[in-house]
Length: 423
Length: 99
Image (tube, rainbow over all chains, first blue to last red; front, top):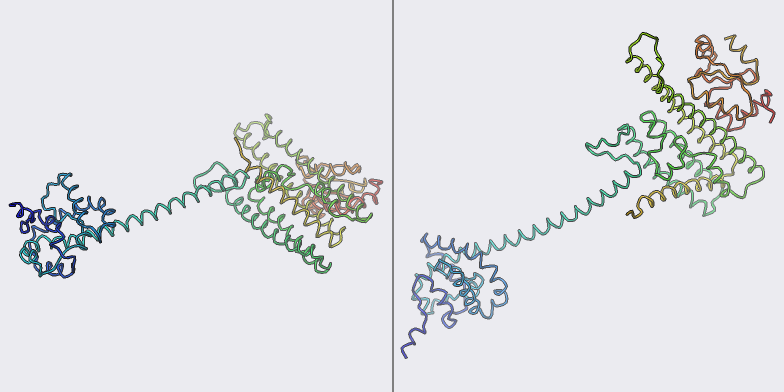
């Protein structure tokens, strides 16, 4: 039959036949590809084929992904099938470039490429095939590098996106915290945020100091609590009580300094939690109320003690009333000053002078706010001091614990309240 | 100075004040609450009196509280004395109050 000739695929044509040639597995030995590459590298010189190779690199890139999956599974066993599939797809795409050999899958190439010099097919067409195959070597390397680079780039991108996601989550969390803290009245400074004029540095410093004081207080209280539950001796308790009590008084000193910078911030309790602020009286707690709450925790009390505590509570209340009346008088006086139509400077001065005079007087009155705060704190400090002289060491310890627990609960209540689900 | 002493000894409880001073208001309120009826002298328009008070060691000059003719302190001192019970004692001793 005359078709026998046609059955043998053409070998030597320089365009587009390489693929066909290597298709026939009977021709190619799946032998030592390394040798062949080196061999070709030595022979190859022409630049035209380089161009071809470059062009096919580009085209190859498009096909690479398509073949990747197929390739992996078929590499060892049936590369022939792969090539066929590839060629089909190539032709389907109408690739203008006729040198299809370079567009073959490089993996396929490397694995299955035959280089047995003894093979008659190869020996005869070696010149052309070298020229055709050699560009593939460079191409192959480049393609492999491209693939590697692409893979690395993909991994990097993935890592970066992951990082971004994490940062985003963290940011939302932080924003929520700030929101919550802002609600509590803590001054959080935002660059450019002027909506909370709170005397600037003074208040901020105090907020930080107050947090620190709370932490330290908590430590002292924990120590005290362990000592009390462990039924330590009075001697051991005494030093702990004294430390805790004197540390408690530190807050009055801190408030005094902060009030110099911003009395309004302190006196209206902007530094406390909302629930605490609800029960606030001139910048702090009411000593008489505190004593009332403590009595139940201090039992058993002797008759003498009960009477003394009762008396202390009453005197504290009286002093509180007096201070409250003073504050009312201040408010009234301030209102009168600002509402006054009558000239506060000698007649004949300009209206502006009147206004300035009014303001000056009002400023003076506002100045006494700091004074009232100091007196109120002094009352609180002295009341507690007096209380400790009436109580035994163990009772003092229990009192300190009770006071701390009470305020902790108020703070916890505030946090819960602020975090409650709102419609 | 003499005038101050003179006025201070006229009654068991005497307080020198200024109408613009709100601390004075507090101390006045406390005394009324305790049942003492202090005699109040305003020194707003009396710089001599104010100077005299300062010379006596009253700092701040007002409120200056005299019990039984003796200067016992200003607002802050009164609170302390009140809390430890000595204010009441002094008032009782001076017969400003009876209980």
